[in-house]
Amino acid sequence: MAPEIPKRMKAIQLVEIKRPYEIREVDVPTNLDPPDLLVKVAVASYCHTDAMVEQGIFGASPPQTAAHEGSGTVVAIGSDAAKHFQIGDRVMCGLPLHPCGACNDCLGPENQRQYCMNLEIGHIGLNTNGCFAEYVKCDSRFTTKLPNEVSFMSAAPLACAGRTAWRAVLKTGLKAGEWVCFIGSGGGLGHLGIQFAKALGLKVIGVDARNEGLELSKKHGADVVADARKGKANVVKEVHAMTTGKGADATICLSDHKDASGIACAVTKMHGTMVQIAQPDIVEIPFRELIFRDIRIIGSVISGREETKSMLGTIAKHGVTVTTVPFQGLDKIDELSKLVHSGKLSGKAIIVVDPEQIEHEKKIGAKF
Image (cartoon, rainbow, N blue to C red; front, side, top):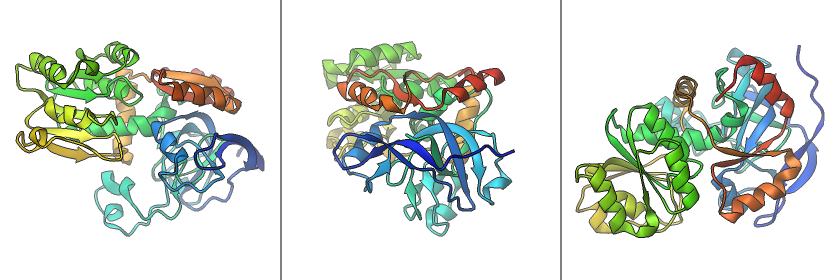
């Protein structure tokens, strides 16, 4: 039996570019197209990308509900989505809404369809309404059912940060026993990437420039950590000491500091791979670190549908955990924003939108 859905709801909205969020009452998005799902949000998470949205980088059209990382329970289903989902499913929301279905990415390999640049609507929380609300509309083709072991508290930040970190590790192409280095290892993506890499049998070097980041890297299993504040030469020396002088087999750059990508290439072995995830305005790499050392640079974004399923399966099997700082209720957005912009956040800041869903999932064994 379908649950009763209200006509109005609370939402945290970006009402003007470069201005603070506001809590407003808005319409529940009940106008579902065939591939759509309406999800009652349990948890929504703040991502670094949200700060970019606030600055107008992704073409937001205020007023717009914020946040693109969310988890919750399906309460209404479009006609096509009903083939794969049912009311009551616990899900991690997908970001893209209505890909064109005709471009090379849509017609190409499954793990490239999330790159469609001709979306009919956009990406939730980036340029259309997102997850900082009691309900959110998302596309079933990019939304993923949660294993019983994976909690809403973890699934929300995994919707972007997890999908991004998981795909980055996959893109390295490394095998068990090889070395991967994370530049910016102690942030929201880094602490997940470390755990994913360890679950796949890789050896991990974490590089960070904050005490909190270095501590989080150690906590989540980095075999060795290096302090970027000591300078590039020292970081390279420490990485080489751990890798018999050759450097990391692959490196993932998660920091948008101007020197981060150069350091990432410098610590990577000759002919190795550097995966660029961070999004500074300009990626700066000294030519000596790139050309003379024959480094391959790969850009990567969120996982595709099957990659996401494999990520959640790995979490359920290996017990990957997400370090979160939870805030109870949408009205705590000012407190969350202050922490995020203080530079002292360790892990991911999340908002528990519906505590009843959190209590309910405990009965089915959600533990990670």
